[in-house]
Length: 138
Image 1 (cartoon, rainbow, N blue to C red):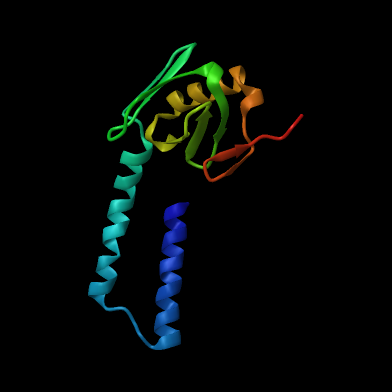
Image 2: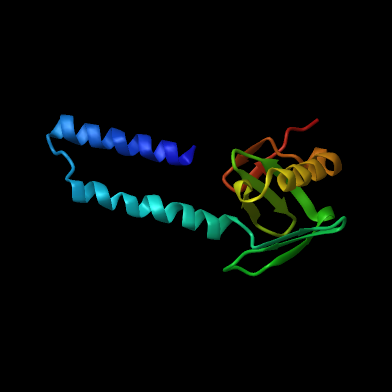
């Protein structure tokens, strides 16, 4: 979805500059657009896909390639939410952890989602403002 949005904005800019300003992009300029197109998935993989994600009844370990790993206790879970491709979790005294769900098989992700839905339904956030969750009061 994000890639489609980026491509739509790029195509819109191409048309605007071409028809509106008479400045059509050269083939070399268009080829340079492949650089962010290639780098974006690589960045997403290394930034939002943990190389270790271990879940037990009491803890979760989240280890990223270029960041320090965290062992967190489920009783400290403040909020969680399954978004469009990105899963968000916030623990007490920790930052929000975004995890790209597309890196896991549907069976693994379904198990993890069901684990949270069954054990922590009251902690599910409905809206996130950047890294900050908001839950409706019941």
